[in-house]
Length: 363
Image 1: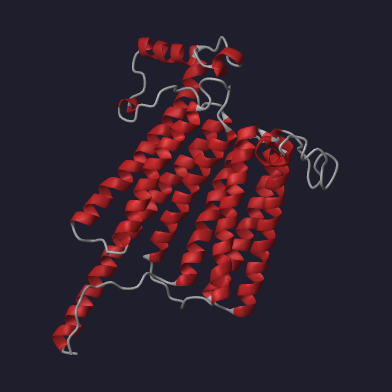
Image 2: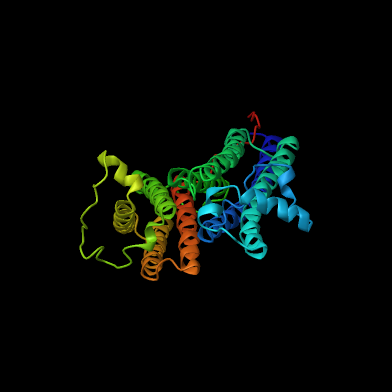
C-alpha cells in the first residue's frame, strides 16, 4: 500500500468518525425528546386529559386557543363527547384548560420530535454525512414516527363516541410503538459509538436481545394495565386478592379475552411479567460474569440487573400507594431507562457498525 493510499484511507476514516460523532449526538437529542414525549404522554393519561382535544389537526393544531372565544369553542367540542357528559359534566373553563394543556403539550412534543428528526436527517443526507447502511435505518425510524402519529389519533378516536376513555388495546399499542422507536433509535446511536471491547460471545449477545424484547413485552402489559386502570385495585404485594394466584382470572368468555379485558387478569399477568424479567436479568448477569468475567459486557449485564431491580421496587411502590401520579410517572419514565440501557447493551454486545469509507485501496 502506497503512502498516498494510506493517507487517503486515514483521512476517510477520520472524516467518517467525525460524521458519526455528529449523527450520534443528534440521535441522543432525539432520544431526550422522545423520553419527554413518553413521560408527558403518561401524565396526560394519568390526569385523564387525553380526550380534551377532539380533532386531529397536524398543522393547524400547533397553535392553542388564543382568545376566550376560541377556548369556548374548544370546550363546546369537548362537551359533545361521552367523557364530558358522563364524568365531567359542568366542568369549569379553568379545569378544562388544565387537561387541554396536557394534551396540547403532548401533541406539540410529538410534532417537535418530527422536526428534530426530519430536518437534521435531511441535512446529514444532503451533505453526504450518512453512511449507506444508515439511510434505510433512519428512513425506517422516520416512517415509524409518522405511523405513531396516526396510531395516536386512532387511539384518541376510540374514546370520542361510545366510550368515556380510550381503548386499552390502542393505548398499549401507542405506548409500545413509542418504545420501539425509542429502542431502535438507541440501537442506531449505540452502533455509531466506538467500542473498546470486542463483540461478546453468542450466548451473551442472544440473551441481551431476549432481555430487550422482554422489556418491550412488559411495557405493553403495563399499557394494558393503564388502559384498564387495573393498578387501582388489588393494591397489595406479594399477595394479590389474598393469594399468590388469585381466583376469577378467567371468568370472561372466550378465555383469552381475560388477558386484555379483565383488569384482575391483566394486573396479574403484568406482575408475572415483572418476575420473569427479573429472573431473566439475574440469569443474564450470572451467565455474562461466568462466560466473560471482567469484560465490559459482564459489567453492563450487572448494571442492567440492578436497573431492573430498581424498576421492580418502583412498580411495587406505585401499586402499594394506589398509583399516585408521581410514582406512576417515575415507573413509566424508569421503564424507558431500563429499555434504553437494554437496547444499548444488546448493540454493544455486537460491536460498532463496520467502517464504510468507500475508499478503493491499491497496493
